[in-house]
Image (cartoon, rainbow, N blue to C red; front, side, top):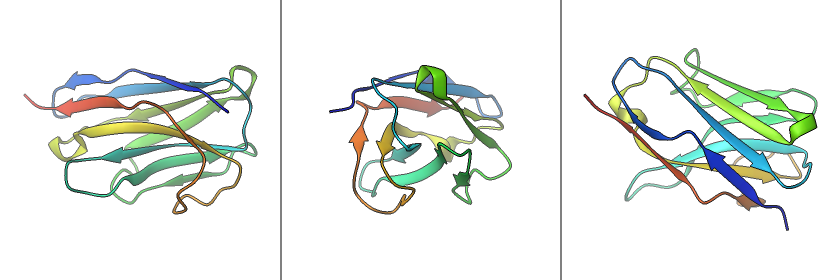
Length: 117
């Protein structure tokens, strides 16, 4: 069992930035961030594997950067130029393969991000 502890959510004004952190209790191949709004499926925001390969949703390309500190088993997600449509609960995920559309791996408890003036 891998435990994931997320931090960094909150209320942000449109155009602002936020940085989410997720610390894992063990090293695992791929880590990523998903988000979910009421009535919608959870969707990938960004993911990164141990070799540094990154994947981004089209909705955040150019605004988001995912990074990883392998020594700390921690992944970070920076999103700039935030929009109201970025409002969601963000979930950290850790999985053994870089297959982001498969329902697998371990999940954090979720952290609310609200973009509003």
